[in-house]
Length: 567
Image 1 (tube, rainbow, N blue to C red):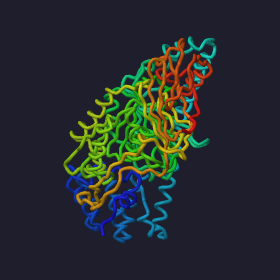
Image 2 (image 1 turned 135 degrees about the vertical axis):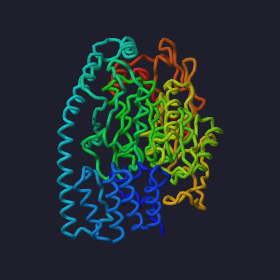
Image 3 (image 1 turned 90 degrees about the vertical axis):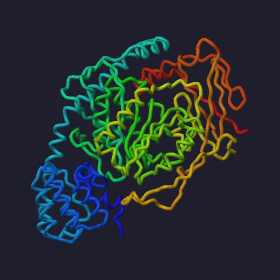
Image 4 (image 1 turned 45 degrees about the vertical axis):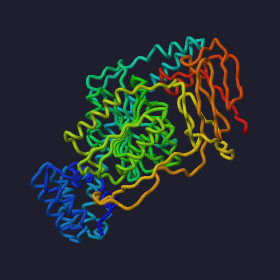
């Protein structure tokens, strides 16, 4: 029986995975010994896999210690105590000791005194490195706090402006003074979540960074979120597992790039506890650096791509564009309301031997997107390319893929004042898109005829450990565990017209970019006039919104709230 990819991924834990997959051991590589090692792993022929690992170590000496870790793993799985301890000792005595992962496959050696000695040595080395990293990170913490304090002081200075109109113009036209005195292009930062949890993230600045210049911002989300048991203390620019090509292309494109860490409880996919991590991170980065508010993007690979898709479905307001590589486009915490994508766009890249979501599924979703009028692009990479290919390879195909992804991204600019919006949710925590918010659901009401789920059937699923094998199975792309509410909304000529379904309360955010505050505003909901009168800019509301968002494009000066009676 072949070992599953999930089990194999767990088995080759820590950065040993990264070292192995960097060379595409599960697909064609430039090192035949690694190809043979990968094939024998899939067959669970551990003796042969061990021998090929040692041959790969000879071929590529720079990766020798990682291959010794593979050899220790294979010997342990084969029940060879002496060889497992021998190769593990070589790893412990090498420069990769603190990054090496010794997983559950070594558990049977726990009572061996020699094994206990090795693990104790690694524990000491890891704690030493951890303390060194924490100590080295202190200047970044100080710099972050100073920058946030300056941003707060700038917002405080705006409170001296007496009129809402003057405050609005100041926010739209002015920018806080920025400074950046640190050397190097990498900075470490932390975002507070769930009261006491501090989540680290890495910031990569563009070449020749100018603190006074506005830059586009890209948030890159990593995969394997449910395998992250612990939260890192400190980000690390030298050991990023988000994909080097993202870093390279962001640098070449002149973007500020941020790489948040996560764990299996606080992340961008499931559960919902950590979903605000990315929106809060974007807001914080805007307090730290000059960001072009119209050009903020989110992307990722695998679970990170699913995360980017989830922000399109649940909280798109901060972003101009969304993209993902080896994506499974499905919201994992509720319904996938695909019509929400009408408000933005998605750039999808898929490989033909991906077990996570098959070509057939991407094609079906692309066809549905075209039918609905969603701006959805689907790029297919053929050649028996597995799930990890585009995150680990740096060949010409991979470079072209990332170049095209960023080229498309550069054409996307956020328009928070679109005249037409559709929004649907089953949780009012995610009830807002730009100027429209579902503030309360009433799912006991009958759904309107235009409010119905859309879905597609997906076949072509592949076996994880042998992706050349296609399963004889079909499933729906999306799930709908709860009833939802939806709104269709249009604004034009100082008026809003809304149609609602299963919604008890809505909120409309107002901006001078949308309406003339010197004229009456009319709001019609479900064919009934709910409001017809003047609205004033609210200075306190405006300042509070800006303090939170630090957004100079999407500037809201008031909001109207309406209870929607049942028909």
